[in-house]
Image (tube, rainbow, N blue to C red; front, side, top):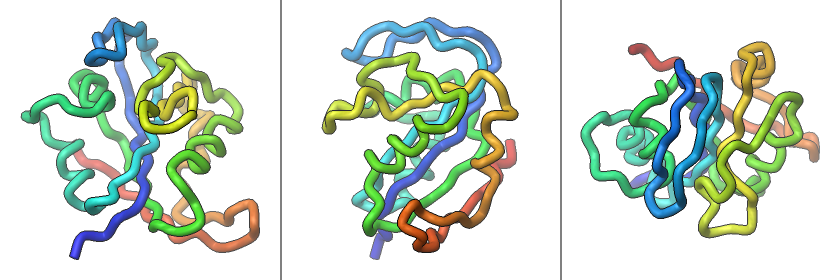
Length: 149
C-alpha cells in the first residue's frame, strides 16, 4: 500500500530563467536554490519518482520549474500533525527565504506560495539535517536522500 505524506524538494537553478508556469503565468526565477513543499496523498514513492523523471506531461506547477532546475535533495515527512502548509510556513520563517512566484503550488490552499527561493547555499544548512524537532518538541522522522546525477 502506498505511503502518503509530505515532501520538500531542494532544487538548484543554475541560471536566471523566465518560465511560463502553465496557466499561473510567466515568472522570473533568479539563479539559486529553491525549496518546494508538496503533498503525496497517493504515495510518496510514486510522486517523487514522477518528479525525477525528465519525460512527463506537465500537470503541476513544479513540473515547469523542474524542466530547468536540478533536484539536489529530498526530505519526506509522514502524514500526521504536520501539514504541507505548516511545513511551508516554517520554511518561510528561515533567514533568506523569499517568494518569487505568487500562487506557485498553492492553488488548493491559502498560502501565498509553496516555493521558497534562497539565493545563498549557506542559508540551506537546515536542509541537510536527518532529524529535527518540531516546535512542540516532538521528534520528526525525516529522511534526507542525496540525489546522484
